[in-house]
Length: 169
Image 1 (tube, rainbow, N blue to C red):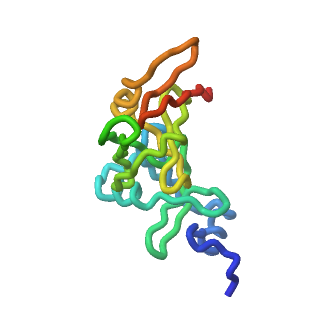
Image 2 (cartoon, rainbow, N blue to C red):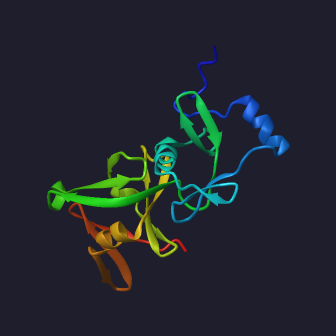
């Protein structure tokens, strides 16, 4: 057994890789608003959408996949593979925590050092920094209520800190 393989990242099975090379695979995609599509048609079954949202992962090579148990299948991602659907502020000042509600179905504490601003919205990193997450409109506005401008620069006052927000557009 090769101990150099990082087992925390799923791998795409060889038979699926062969199908990818031949072009015989289905296109499963997440658009920039978090909607799921199969060969251009939107998924409408909420249970399938929730299953896919919970299953999003990334391979060691940086390819987004649906990964659940032994099943791993590549997906296309137009923007971010995970979306922030809500925020909850707990505490105040340096004791403040911001809990994110994610499309993965799991709450996660915001790592404020990963906040970025691009495409007119906020992004952060989740899952120990492995995946980018895009803030939906409502949670984005909720965070941006803490925005302040000084000398042409924008700062967010979160967790007792002033975080410089750089526009990455």
